[in-house]
Amino acid sequence: MTQIFPRFAGKTVLVTGAGTGFGAEIAARAAQEGAKVAIHYRSSRAGAEQTLERVRAAGSDGILVQGDIASWDEIKRMADEVFAAFGVLDVLVNNVGDVSSEQMSWRDLTQEALDAVIDVDVKGTLLMTHEFGERMLAQGHGSIVNVGSTVIVRGSPRAPQYAAAKYAILGVTKSYARVLAPAVRVNTFAPGFMETERLLNREDWKSGRREVLLEQTPMGVIPPPEFVAGTCLWLATEEAAHLTGGYLLADGGFNMVGA
Image (cartoon, rainbow, N blue to C red):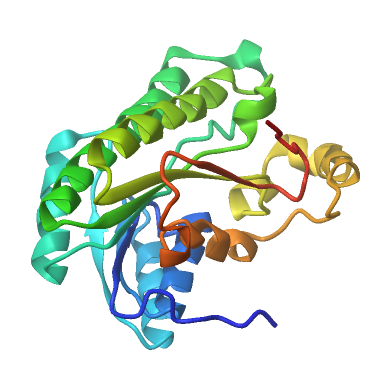
């Protein structure tokens, strides 16, 4: 069993989209490592409450924060709530994103699907980074981790708007890494495929894609999200203190991006 160290003792962490999937695992892991956690959700309140129970079971505590990250006004309200509750925010993990999971081909692209991905993945990530980054700058410290994707390496014949949006996150990360330095670090974490409930229910996953990817992954594993939650949070630790504007890939060797 992996030993867990208290890397975030006395720290506060906000995780977006923490009611389900990867976000829930990041929030739970942060609590296991000593952090108080703000658990953001948009509509999955029941899931967010379950995550809060896990946070408390880990011996920590937290709050629930509801809002639509596509709205700057709601982001400002959420920021007010987080800073009112904690007085400070040490880490923001921008995890939430729209992956167009129902779309199985580029030919199925719709205006609605395009707008949803751009609003959440691009506008939402940028506005969260902007609003919370400005407040972190004012307090004199902070770390922001934007959850990207390995889809930018190969593109997506399934949902090109998703690949485009995740590529845009690199621009967001690098831009704010420059303007917020040296007080606030901003990095992108790019996990590969993780067996979340959403992925397990996708039609292509159930019809053979999983087996193909396993054959192409040197580590031979498509992990559950909790397997890489600690890797994501590493970017916000003191061990990564000289890393900003970076892109950390964790996909079992599937893409093996080099210089």
